[in-house]
Length: 556
Image (cartoon, rainbow, N blue to C red):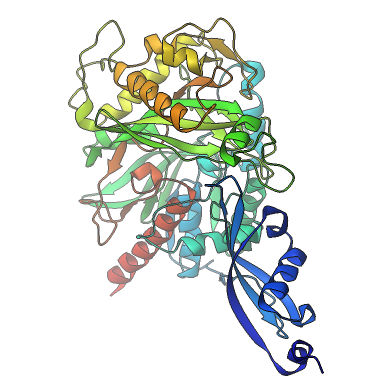
């Protein structure tokens, strides 16, 4: 009997292997089987299954390879489940916790509360994820934004319709892998568990979010849409709940509502009315650094050619190419943010007199363009700066220079300036990339994915000097590093300002409660403690655990 064929009958085992294979073979299980059997000298008939644990593309050299970590099952049946699932329980009669905001921080806080035997009451100012999509579609023809239902506000938060990217560098604060598993449990592709830069896609994430909501409701929680928090209910130095207003046109309820219980405040980085209420009521906040700049849009084919070192681009087997760029210019970081291969630039304002742009990608990333935020680090100590012909950092209004809200005021001024440059509509002021770098007006613009439309504008003139100069210098450096990157085929689109919260709601590092108010748990990106979907979900889970400890302490 052939020795390798004998393996088929005598051995059972699971082997973890590191593979480096061509893109043609990396995305097909049968091709991986062939490769493993050939390289290991195994009878292919003994391989019952190959499961990919990790996958990343190595495009540093002209020959592109895919690095895989796989589990190979030899005469062994794999587990039916590819990932560990969470068991959720009925919490209908359990103590209630108020969760303000149904973005990733709020949704994962609610699900974790259920695990811990607490009943989440989720209050969301925007609409459910399906109705919200209709309001987004109206931005283009109406050239205006609904201030309560937009790319920032509504079920799923800012990530639901602005990409669904799941990559995070943070490894310190919690179990990011669990966040991915919960997404898979609610309908996301298991491929997010293995991809180096996991991505659900804006076309699929809404259905996942709906499934998460169904879990909350099935277990006895509540979700209230079009219900806007207007203030906290304070009992001395304890938060006893929230006041809210129901904005639904179909609601027959009294518009004013009260929800009582400890509060997880996960309102997102664009809830400026919340920051103002907290500030006006003497609740401790602090200004926080952020990054502002532009969206840079290239033809996707050009980015594929640059990143894959091939005039033919990605070919038949590789995905749309990504890039990640970082550069120090005059003591501040300049970097790419939320890169969207094969994606779209979208209008991400959350109120009147604002132009804000962001990026998104569908799951297949097959669009004609690729875009990325290109932003400059800005610290609180950088403000205020003296104005010089409108080209320095914009002056702040009403003596607000010393306010903890000064970074937020700066965002507002820059977004208002951009709106004025865009003819006071949602048409975005734009410039060809090389023209921006060289200080020339663009007399025409390339085609763009930005649906409300572009208008030629001298961003090199009206953008704040410290931002404009650093972007120009970084673009020159990257143009030398990546031949073809600095080109007039690319478009600079203003402005990208919502990279993170401009404020931190100060909390205790151990209890996660506000530094003075018991029963208030600032959460996620809007509170200044996360940066993206996964880290916001992790922080939501941590806040839920902190609430559980708080309630257990009160009962003892």
